Image (cartoon, rainbow over all chains, first blue to last red):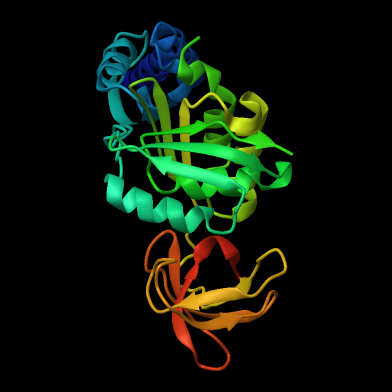
Length: 162
Length: 140
């Protein structure tokens, strides 16, 4: 009987002691957040901690931010392991600038300026559209939109508004 | 000031208004901005920004190509000329013969978007041909 009660007391003490030493998840979370402060994309990273396992989530731009965040989180006090659910954003692919061939551009400019009899337009072989003449102020945008959609190299707008 | 900085209010507005496939590149002293706006109103807002940055568009350093292609569900378009009738042509080009006309304000059928500039349409009389897309506004 004595032994049993002693054992119970010991196990209780051990349990209490263990719980007492173990950092709370909330504290670990703040440790991880502090460790991530140096990460250039810290603002995009969210942290959750369950039973000392830190989970990182969010979308970062650079793969290096993803790996350095994991290293930093793993080194934070109280972290048992890290689940790295960070996503890296797909890189934005910039399409090359497309310039329409001069003949297609010439036909397009003719169509676009048909309803603007006071506008004279020329197209050079490189694709530069030069606009001369006059245009009503409220029609400028409509004409510029139409010309811009034709993929010119440049628009030299020398129109005077009236 | 670089061109990207000069036109930053414009590119920022394009990002904010969720212009799709936004591409911004600088080449030979010209900034090229391409993308697709969800509505004509967004396109107009972006052009208003351009107008603020470069009044009267005289700098020759930007080609702003914002499309507003209606989605495939759109089958009706309204003729939004100033006041005149809209020519409907045999093919996509003002050199093509006129095969019909649609009245200002009339709602006609959109058959296909043949190109960015020319859409294939059918009038209420059943005449089919190509009309200049700038004068057509998709019906919701």
